[in-house]
Length: 127
Image (cartoon, rainbow, N blue to C red; front, side, top):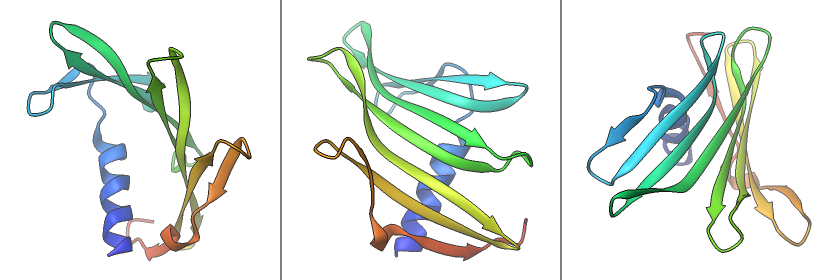
């Protein structure tokens, strides 16, 4: 089950690459940022009446082979009007395996903290 959740999360974060794509079912608008054809960030806005409001922001990092090595999610804090760290997923590649490690932001420690039960290693035939 954990593998399926991680795989689904990876797929969702990886395939949302269209600029200004509207999702009519939940009123979300996606705006992707690309550098040299690679998506390095994505901001998600939520429709509130006739206005757009910040909702989520994603930052992506890649290795020299253009494999995603980090996916960071930030949530919008409307009270403070700033992006707040939420979670980060790190990907480590070895041979035909990829290890997905999940971290959640800890306000007290002011750092990402490992959530060990969400760490998963999978074989990937495409590597």
